[in-house]
Image 1 (cartoon, rainbow, N blue to C red):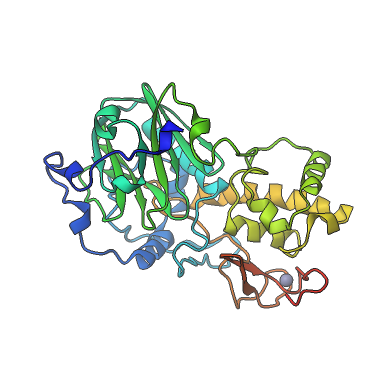
Image 2 (image 1 turned 45 degrees about the horizontal axis):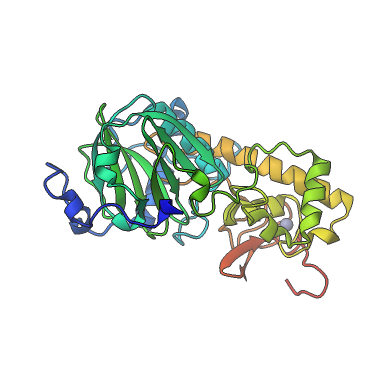
Length: 363
Ligand SMILES: [Zn+2]
């Protein structure tokens, strides 16, 4: 319980006198976020991304230039459906899976030489974060569901990016943006930055002896959506035991960890199942489709993100999605126009023909 109450850092003071070159983040000009992300996404070079080299020369504030727009191998142009910031941008299992391996390559063995706190509101720690983290070395980077865990030689940083948190690797000299919540400058001149436009994510800084299960949401995590070992039969049994609606079940982190709005929509479209169907109404063939679609869509998502994510990270890859954020576009399977409806607080996207609603519902 002790882990997530007191906040580390002390506001803008945290920057005073410790940052020789970079300006205070609060004072930098507002960033046209949606636009820039879109451009970054389009300009991303999959070849460069695949190389996976640490982006020591690519600053967070420097837009990528001169690289042709990415086009899918089979011809359909990659769309960058980022108009509604936040919606569909939550990092999910495939995103964190790829980000983890990139970060591990860039960070393991490196020492933190400077800690810059831009937004103390995201920090959760019982320790003075700047002095605690200084001169620690990265030992490994793991992820669990939607959490990223940085193991250090004397502690851990556990991040739940929530809706909009995102990691970047920048040159330490590059200008900090207004939404940079935490910057860890490394001994090789790279800078691990966490930014969060919505300020909803949480960065827990804990000691090696602290129990990660004390972190809110961590203890309840089910197996990871991208590598759970349940057979089809076991999956069906566990799903049926919940009696839930399919979309709610997919997003329940205690059932499987790491699926959010975007991949839930994609999985259900792939399985040709309406999001509000209840598990109990699925026949064996539908349950089998549900299971296989889940496995396939997450695995494919991880491949697409691996291919599309630029070395400096700092964006989320959604161009491969078939229904998510594609309202009014033809369903890739049947041509019917994709619709967007409300689902609690979330928006969901589906094909009204491929995914017929349960009895008694209009859509
Ligand atoms: Zn369809």
